[in-house]
Length: 624
View 1 (tube, rainbow, N blue to C red):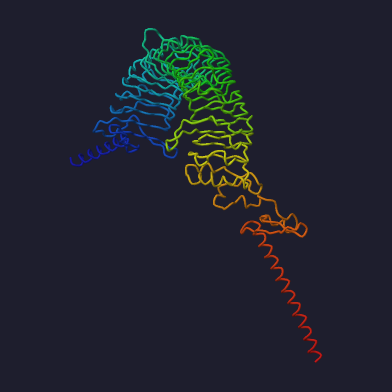
View 2: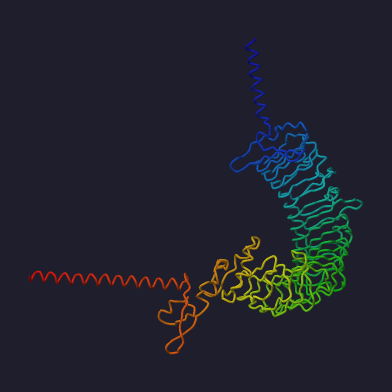
């Protein structure tokens, strides 16, 4: 009897061991940690040299005495099948991203009662089972992006009344059906970027769609009809960028009275006239082929307009007042002048790479609150502010027609930024990358108080010392990339600019490409290396011609003339030799060589004399 009992106990022990092995606590294999006070994270991730083995049908979830929410991540597993997973009512989020899943078992999440988020992104799922989400009632987010889905059965998601966001981007979907829109009537955000969509069916009537954000970028749309969005009246964001749109109906967006952002950028639109709702705040229609003004109206609440990279030669032809616009980017068009409209609240204006030939007149009259003005890449050959202009910053770069900045060119420019002492205002000016700019006259910046001044990567060899009060520029001076002449006249740069930049750690990056171009012996040398030397340029070999043009004078380039004299001219010649200069070293070297030669000759002569004396003595003693 005792032996039989022992065998039973032994068998039970083995069974318990098998059960324990099969149902190992997931935290013994994966990383588990408390993310928030009431949220527990389980992170299971395989690596190339460390592949985890988990039996998903027999997962033993960790003890959870406090009934905290759990979020589980199972990533980089070499699994082809998503099985029915052993569940836990405390799991609210489950993530199977970045696996190799191709097939999904029937009701894989049946044992989870409170899931709010499911993510199966970056797999190879081509089809979904009809009962894929049958047991879910609390799901709020579904992510199926980066798979191979070509269609979605609306019945799979129709019962998900709590679903608020669905991500189907980077799949092979070709059409949004009315049934799909009805099934997602409670969804607020739908992401469908990078599919093959070319049409959206008309949504059903008498449904109060909750959709607020619709992302359709990188698809195959060519035409936007008036019926496409008219029932989706709660839309606030529509992204149609990077499609193949050629035409848009005039009334395509007029019924979307909640619309705030419309992105039509990077399409093939050449000529359209659309009416927009007054609710619109941001319109992006850049990078198209527009050759005429596309708007029938300017929305009352429009604060930002991106219309760059088109072929427009005028803006706002009929609108005299643009009340709400704060930012306008009209760069890379064919504009010849500032628009005639009154920009009451405009703060940022980019007119770069157009056909302007001068700094626009009456800037502050048309845009009294303008802060930033960009005029890069225009045909401006003469910088001149003819009226008083107040800005925070101005950029005048890549002006290929600019060769010279004349005296008093910026005298009417002032700033809106307060200086550090809060007593004055200053302006940030960038005049850089102008490859043909070779001269700035001494009084060009007369009367301007700079916050920072960027004159980098022009073709300036010299900088006038009295161009501005260099010590008053609080945020640094950028002179990098110019072919500077390191001459005696330019030595002031070391003390007035270089020392200030060097002493401020925040400005030391402005020293990196500040180099000499001439004279030849200093070409490529950084100016910062001369900072602690006394008069390095004025005492250099390149400052004056050698005093003597022949003989040893060719080897004395560091002898600076004090006065001259000669038997022919009656003038006295004196030299001043600067210690440890190249000339000084050459003189010492020559003297040393001459001294060594004298010693060698002397030693040889003395040896010859001793030999002669020895021969005489031998002859004398032989005769004796």
